[in-house]
Image (cartoon, rainbow, N blue to C red):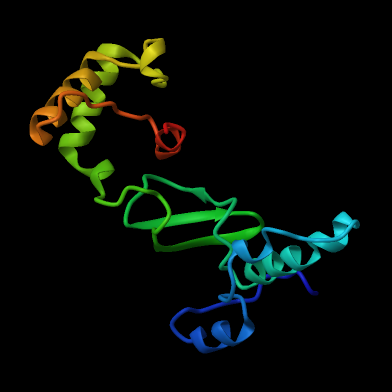
Length: 158
């Protein structure tokens, strides 16, 4: 069947994977589809996505099972669970697993309760984030420092 996953053993099948075309291209190649027929315009992207999914290299719509460790177990989008190097969690320094970070997070959670920080204008700051801004300002010799909850939030500031 066309859409069945292809068994893939990275230790033995790298040449076959490379030859399949599943590692070629990127989403940017499909950013400006042309034509009136929406399905026909989207067909090349759909084919590329299906090719990558069949070979087990589709990175989206996966679920992380456990903490974002350097080696992680992921599953989802109809693919079997796979363990491998985690390039997707944005935990670049593996601090989420550091005992001191976990202990500090548990202490603050018990003290402040769970909440998602929003804009600093709308009570998004806490005394901890204010102290961090002050420490960063001292370190960098800057009078004003603003923490953003995400990189995307920073991109909206011009």
